Length: 68
Image 1 (tube, one colour):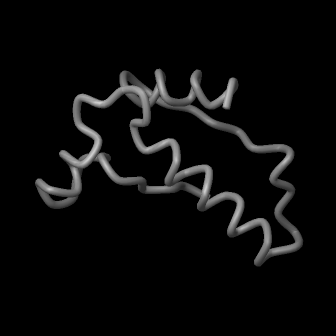
Image 2 (tube, rainbow, N blue to C red):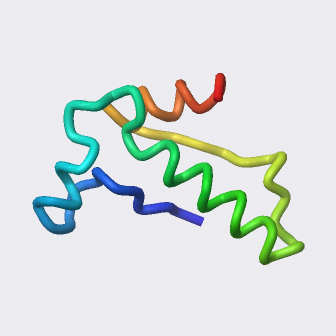
């Protein structure tokens, strides 16, 4: 599963700029909520074993997710 959270590029300007400059969140709340909701809906998903990765701001967010 790949989550296209608010603030990621390749969409509208307002979508991209939603979290722009806010490295504290950087889309992480969207991604956490999505994984939890998908885990509730799909019993085959093990949300206790989730891999994450990122580059630049996404790298910051993925590292921050380890402590969320």
